[in-house]
Length: 342
Ligand SMILES: [Zn+2]
Ligand SMILES: [Zn+2]
Image (tube, rainbow, N blue to C red; front, side, top):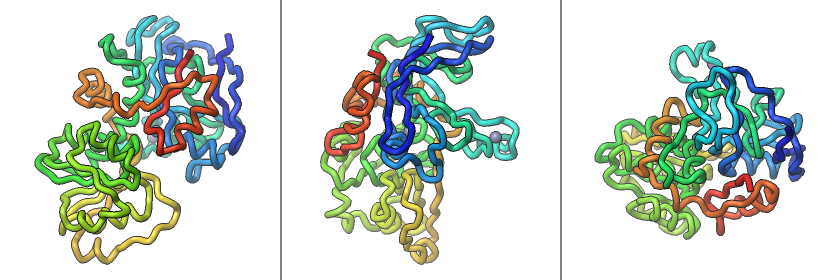
């Protein structure tokens, strides 16, 4: 039984073509796609044939932010049953390397992260009508009012939660988030869950600031016009724009002894006001994907303590993937564009 799959054969070469999902092992589950969010990394693969250092070397099915509906289960599966709607954790750390064994699984040296060209053969992703996952990657969501689109936001929310974990204690903190795209908004939601007293989001696009306010940010500031007003005001800055100017804003915006978390993907080389880091004893730390925050993200979506609904800007059928990718790349119209089965 073959399933239509979005397959990238290289830069700007996206085809919707049949692929056969692998056979079910005893702990495997075959899923029909619920919703699959198009992420910045998916767009990089489509536009450039690469995402950072990861280059497409064979046809790649992208997609790592998806929900699914259980179609069939292997003989020994106990975690889910046919018909369940599930959140899907795309991360498969090896469990045996030094970083895994010290509990930092997101830094695994042999990570298999679905929809990624970081390994060869590539880890095929979730933009397919049907695919197979191990049951341990799946968490059923039983609240009928929570949509498959919302459930698909568990992965990006887990990234926001991990960024906040890397920020340290936020109870009562003043937090700046640069970038009001999906990850910036997820970081704002996560900062709120962590008890931040004041959350300001900076972006150069009005639409992104509207989104940030819609998910509960206290203020939205134009980073291109009003960055000076942010200086020296924040305990923590979370850089989610992946823009050099935004990083400069963050370094200026945190108080002495403050912390900056880099979660956006910057260009390879950026100017960096390092003396300010030295003289003001700033901490500059990275946050990469997530490590143990996935279940927390699912729980927050199930209860809508993190209400991600405003961020889902469009849903298109898988067969119209190219149009969906183009729409997702247009920040003036889109935050999170999702592919759906239909
Ligand atoms: Zn993503
Ligand atoms: Zn490992």
